[in-house]
Image (tube, rainbow, N blue to C red; front, side, top):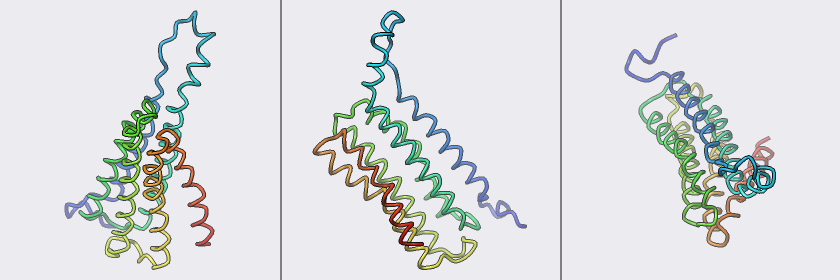
Length: 205
């Protein structure tokens, strides 16, 4: 087996390790947005449950971001299953994806702390849109460069992958539009990802 590092390229395994590490770190950092205001021990019995209940917007942002990142990590593994070697183009696209992933804890915390502010929530939607868009670009790149894939991606698989990759960008646009009506509830649009994936799976089976 040849090592593609001998010609100056980064190996597929090293890039996957970097991706796994950044996804894991970003998903862990999401919990830092769940900051409990200081409550004295004497106040805890009366105020703790109420205070945690008032953090519902932070919990919603955390759960949405966590499960979407987990979904994107799975998508990345699925897409990289086709990769035989990493070239400069794929490397650059992956770095853009990771930049969006690293931003997720920040935009999640902002949208959770200021869920009533449209600008704060729209930062989260924009982050989601860019993340989904770069995954779409990555999949498009793989379908157009059979020289870096283990086997050529069929037109049917390419089409299914495109539809799957379009889900998050489309849903984030819907969230952005809905934020003009209700910024806080616009986060609920990401629930649509689940039935959309189910529809694509059923149509592709």
